[in-house]
Length: 367
Image (cartoon, rainbow, N blue to C red; front, side, top):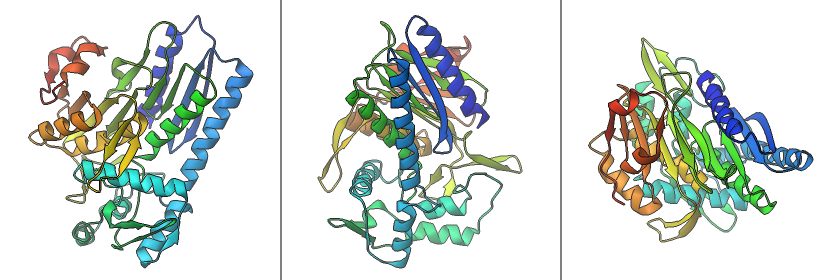
């Protein structure tokens, strides 16, 4: 968590320094288990305070509704799934499930919010992360039960699961969803320039002055940013890392990103960063179209990439390029080797002169 807080402070320092001549309103809070900061530009302070407070309230309400292990709409749904019962759900939760199902399908189920049971067994559904070594038989049984988003059956205002092993955990989706809600709200209120940062998941509105926002990319094994990059209007950036939520046993790091194929925390990657353009329409195998925005995609797409081996990356990156216009990707493996796509290489700014000499280009994405 120290690295996350340092990253947020570093990002704000970069932004506020470059915005020195503008009227800046900045506020911070703690939601979704991480530090949240909001920066509004050229909005009178009383109104900026009101707008930022509303965004924070919206975040807290969303967090309360989607909490996976405390009393919430989501925990009630999970209890019904476990009991094989149908339950009434909100229109919002229904739409979230539809969107998350499509995203799961297009990621070949590497993004799989239905594996909340595995996340719980590894001890990541709690505020503090202490070493846990779950029973291998229990993990194997959960993997063999194969919980999938497509096991969920939605009717007009009810839901049930054909698979009692389905337990939803939206931790890899909710922050991005919150970014989109905040961006849409601020635009509806006439805010043209803002930066919203939820623990390193960031979305930009407009510019600061005459230039785009510039944000940092966290060094997964250091206290500060490894590089900076410009974030254009409507674009979002997200990073998944093994340094945010993890524990160690005998010198081995176990992070919160669980591979649904093995039931184990993944070991081969330190961090994945993705930059996404504004919203796109996508379709799942059911041909049901959903409107997916940059915030959600920036939160979701880093997870499947995090799980990939070097041999698996080209096909998946190509697929995400075609579906989501994902062109900007950075992968840092568990040997701290850096891999970067050509488009991101063109506009990234390294903060250490040694880094460009250690970077390998990912040539699997075509323009």
